[in-house]
Image 1 (cartoon, rainbow, N blue to C red):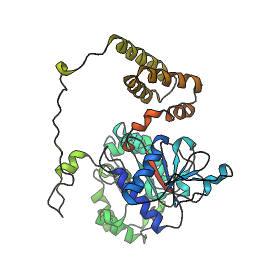
Image 2: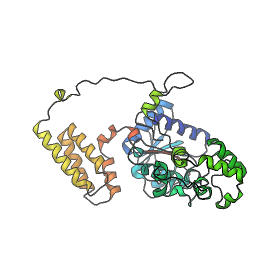
Image 3: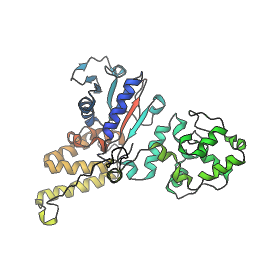
Image 4: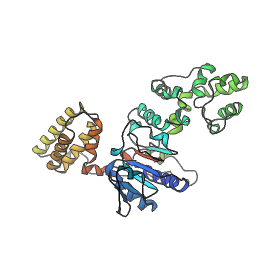
Length: 366
């Protein structure tokens, strides 16, 4: 889910989590930035009357603020509620959590706004243990250097049916996507749960089947790729301009806002000491960016804290230098920032949140 900020991803995720909890027989796990865990718990109760528990790193804390006794780290597997919330700071990177899930949703408003390969990375996480997303391990769609140009239209699929078949068959689109795929799946005796056609399956296609294949080849990479099949991406402009056929009204009612005080003459000049503080903060952040990839986020945080009080800005820098100390470990760097009080002002939609249904073992990466 990659809708723009403010379009309701939180509510949709909450409803999905409720359905998982009600219809499934396994627990539901929410992985979110630490400052947002309490916000998630509050909104689940406020929006859906849905109880949950947060793992604090030492014990579970339920929606009533009651702490559940813990016997050690293994107690994380004994959540007192059907839905558990865990800080992503406690999750290690490089694991394969999707292979342990039955249902999994990733939600973010930012990566696909940067570069298509960011979306590819998220799909790669989603595809672990599931041929439905990008096909099997030999799929062309699992190769970023080939798949991304194909999706962006920088590379065209071969007009030769035999060569193009390697892209089409793995994964082979479902019947409802196009009547040609319906007929091809029928010819190959594939069920809805079958996602990859055998490498030798092209030899089973007859003349009429190949004609149907040719119908979908033009601009195939743009029209029938796993990106648009697996990613929900809506913009505010689309929702405000598109009419819902059931109501005759736009999906999202436009809200017109007129801002005052945005002109240069309306601005308030910063005192000299604030200007100096901002300059030093930018110099510090620029130097930091050469040692840690998360420094862009840190600059935003630091300038915001300086805008609160100079003391708050100084405390943020002191905390970073004392706890991270330039070790070069990006995970330690992120964990250090995650404990900052003012990070709580971040919107849920500004961070990636994972809903996963699990058996045991909580490991993933942002």
